[in-house]
Length: 392
Image 1 (cartoon, rainbow, N blue to C red):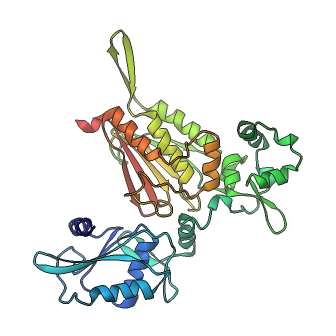
Image 2: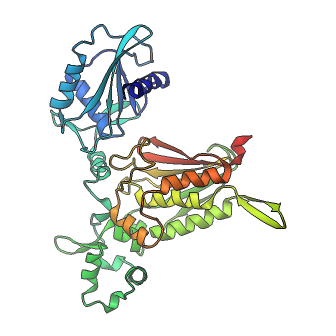
Image 3: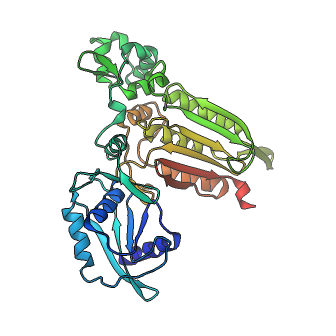
C-alpha cells in the first residue's frame, strides 16, 4: 500500500500540479490546509505533497515528526464530515518530503469548520458557488436531477403517444385503459410531479417523453463535428446539432456516425468482408453512457462528439458520479440519473449491469488493438477512441 502511494507521489512530482496534485513548500496554516483537503475530497480526490515548490523543485522539510498528527487533527476536527486520509513521509534527492492522499469522498460535500465549501478547479481551490454545490450533491447521489420539477411545464408538454409506446413495450398495456387518470399514472411513472398548486413535468419526463425537451432544457443537446485533420483547428467538414428526446438523440447519432465513418473491405476465401473504422457498438455504448449519465444541471453544456482523421472524442458534461474514479470505473457501478437509466434500460438501450466500460475496451481491442482513453477535465468526462491511423 505504502509502495503504491510512494509511486503516486513520485509520479505526481514528475508530472507537476494538476487537478489531482497540489504542491506545498511547507505545512500551511490550519485554515488553508482544511480548505485544500476539502477541495480535493469534494471533487475527484488527489494528493497534497509537502516540501515541493510550485515549479516542482524539491525543497524538503526541516521537521516531520509531528506532521502526521497535525494533519490528521485538521482532517478530523476542522472538516465536516471528517475526512480519512493516508499519510507518507519519505526522502527524495536526500530531502524529506511528506504527502497525504485524499480519496474522492462518498460523504460529499465537505465543509470547513467555518462553514465554507471548497472545490478544486485545475490546479487551484476556490469556494463553491451555489450551482456547483448543487452539482456536488447530485454527483454524490443525494439529489436526482432527473426528478426535479421543471417550472412552467405541465401535462401538455408530455407526448402521450411516446409514453403509450413505452407503456406497451414495458408493461404490454395501454395508458388509456388504466383505471386511474393520466395525471396520476404519469405521476406514478415519475413523468409528472405534484407541485404546490399544480402538476409539473419532471426533468426526466421531459427528456424522455417531452414534445420539445429543449424548450425547458436547452442544454440537453448533442453537438457533432467532423474535421479534416487531427485537431480542432483543421477544416470543419460538417457539423450537426441533435435535439429531441434522449432515445431519439441516441438513434440519430448512431445514423450520423455510420454515415461519416469510413469502412474497408478485403476478400477472405470466397467472400468480401467489410470492416468499419471503429466498432459501431463501442461508439454506441459511449454515446448511450454519455446520454444516460451526464450532468443535465450544468447550464450551457452539451454532449460533444468530434470526429477527427485519427480518432473520435466524446465529451460528457459532469464529473464521474459518487465514488466512481478513473481507477475503479472498470468494475464499479453508480449513476446520477436513476429514472433516465431505468427507462433507457427498459427500452433496451443499456444493459444495466455495469459492464459498459469493459465492453468498450474489448470491442476496441478486437477492432484495431487499441484501448479507449478515459479522462476528466474539470466539469467534463472525455472518452477517446483511436483508429488504425495511429499505428503508422
